[in-house]
Image (tube, rainbow, N blue to C red; front, side):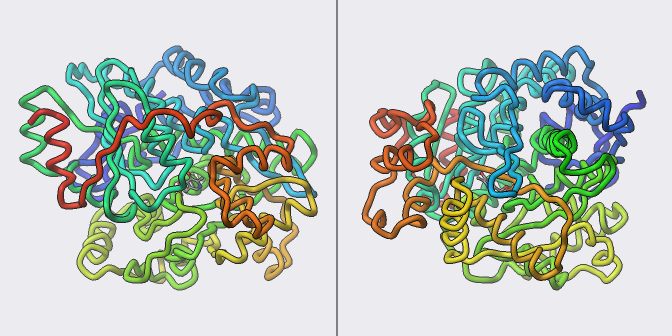
Length: 496
Ligand SMILES: *Cc1c(COP(=O)(O)O)cnc(C)c1O
């Protein structure tokens, strides 16, 4: 197979292998790595339908990671998608009340981030071997709540790595926070920041390209990498479950092979839905990708108007993993829809940095027809949770509820009858209080952990083992800092 190379969205002169792209996380020019071409998966759908999740993953990954052998990928996939997931299906498609959901929360931290992060350490280890890297890899991560724990879980105790996670101290759910601050492992570091996710993410991005810091690290045989979806190694494993979902829906007669299937995706950093777009470009018959935002509706406004404007009020919502105003992975979409012009992308990103906004050209807008955007208010989100529970006996987490509501409104508005899958990104147990309160206001005074038992009663889904007893685990990480202090904190952790 010909070698697939990766470019930076901001400069064509950077051309690296998949292994190099995964190890560096972000390109030196501040751009994101993108595959020069999206490979086609030409195996007939009815043949792919015979594969289990792990086999399908290898079939997809080998096309993107051409410098990895099939044997290596098979081993990595087997180590990632095993009984750490609570179902052998890994990513089941379930149907409740006539609606299909792709459940991506069966991994060790109960959110969809596990789908990629369970695999990433194995890909990194292989990549380090291939490139002859003999340095310690420092995984520097900003999180809106779920990436942090999934990355900690994945990298804790992994030889040759250290992981540093910054999370918005006031911007994550109590369960998310407790999951992170109780993380064991002497290579793990968790720090709250006084600010929101965008502060954490922009702070981290700055450190990644700070020449002086990088030089000081090099002197100690340390290099940065990223576990955020700016890392292409996060994105590619996510492509797999779009194929898997389609094949499952096809197997139970929901679509005929080749017919379009829509996906409604709760979106923040645009990584999940971008993987759906990649799947479509690979040849999967994806219909419309419905990009669902919460009240931080910067993306739904973008899809409606072609203007991206981050200068707006920031809201803390019940779907904190989507409380984001700068969606990193949109940069990769811009690169695709402008004819892969790194000059144009650089220009737009400069406008975003200096003016807080940019407008795409009419030609680019015409290439956005695979997507529609929409948003759900907090009231609509809790209504969706209540309604689906009452009518179908199924409990949505707030992120999934946002997608459900936006999809409902899309169908009402357009009359679309296209079969669809609502992508379900987290277990309701991560957001106990908001979910219970949506069902009944009497729970407004409850406390997240105390409500586990109530939730168990009404869902008949037992409290997941990974959060049982979480409330009483010792807090091991207590550090909080300001955005301006992030560099100092990192330097002290690394002994620079
Ligand atoms: C991260 C996350 C999202 C948003 O996904 P992006 O890839 O950032 O768009 C949605 N729901 C949950 C539960 C998440 O953890």
